[in-house]
Image 1 (cartoon, rainbow, N blue to C red):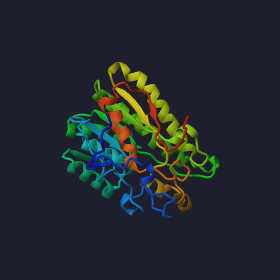
Image 2 (image 1 turned 90 degrees about the vertical axis):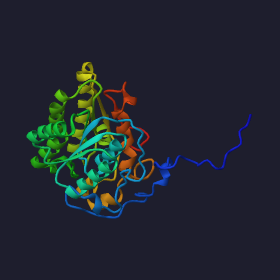
Image 3 (image 1 turned 90 degrees about the horizontal axis):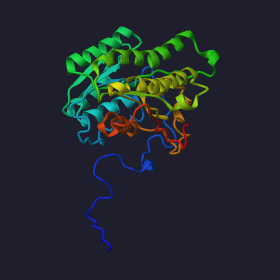
Image 4 (image 1 turned 180 degrees about the vertical axis):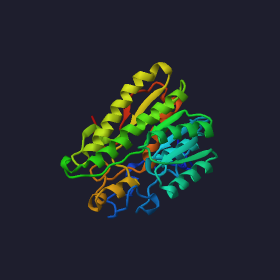
Length: 307
């Protein structure tokens, strides 16, 4: 029997992102030329990124959990912090020195009714990595979800242009720091807890202008798979999210202005992702819905194939 349509029903649920990827116009046709000193500030970007402030709706998937997110002041990290908080988690964010951006993230976490902890410092310092884990455990009462999201990259025309200082900084931030954070966190974690790493499409495909960065992300992908097997007997899951181009302060503070202008144009959608479009993947992997998933590399790249 045919059911008549009820015109009073909305076309889609109220709130949340529009499911049509073509409805996002930021970045369509390119971004305005712009540049900032590293590490960049979200509030100075044009346009500012969407972290799900007005759209993400939680449903209690992470109630009673505590998360530590590196690079949590802006970009993907802020979007994940907002989403986790709205799912019921208390959230600690680690960041370099972007205090204004960090304050904004903390404000959104607290507006969601959750406890928040700000942890400024340099992740290239092993002692700081240990201290941020200890402070999270002490001040928030535990650690159930570790998100290794902070990263550094700097474009160069050739491998011959990569200085020893840049190579050291890229590997210390993108590989050493996650390892140190994991080493500090694992003794505090129990069955059902989760480690999530932020990889990259360039770790899957390579990049001639981000050779050192691509190498670190490939290392992080492999770390995910190897560690997942190593901690499976403890009931701890390890997964990775490897996005394509995402509109974050890292882009405007490390890329030439002409490359900022065309950032993301080579995707299927003709634009870069907004952080709010990536955060739900982290929520899924952090939640009990992904209980069977470990050693996986999820790749929301906006591309037709990744590997």
